[in-house]
Length: 238
Image (cartoon, rainbow, N blue to C red; front, side):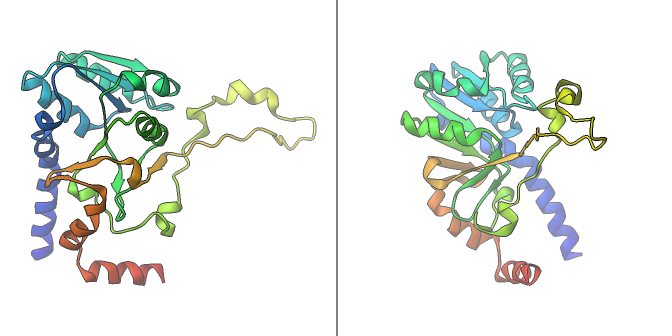
């Protein structure tokens, strides 16, 4: 019974975290600012819309997030809420970053050292922001906090997605050597799913329990994870 209730509470927290994080929007998005985001994040969408509802006027640049280009989806959603946005190619980030006041992105996971696991390509955005002294803000629910460090084996493994997201088979089939009957090819396609942004590139982490410096993550882990969690992890690793 205790486990079922705990799971129900977790589901409720996950469902409500986007709205709770969005309450912080007016503290970070100011009038006439230019915001840069990357791909699509439901938390970022709620965050931006909350600022719009509070009569903040701002512009959004959206790096499309190739190869899946979820930034196109976000642009359509923002337009539906009356927000002005401009979609750019990922390679254009450095070209427009000097016009930006603030970078706001989502994350797949927040590591124990304050670094974040994010969609592929976002580390480039973080580096551009650091180069131009622009705040790089990550919005993520507290349920994405992870007690692992980047050097842990589970973290170093990346998900390799289908090569067809980058190149359709028909577009490079002429590279195949069919004369041998083996079909060996000198061409390989790598399509990793995730990037890692180290804590020194993250200005602020905004969660449903408030905004925190990346160096504060160890305190949150102490609050949300028990020694038993670590023990189970160690047994699993062994």
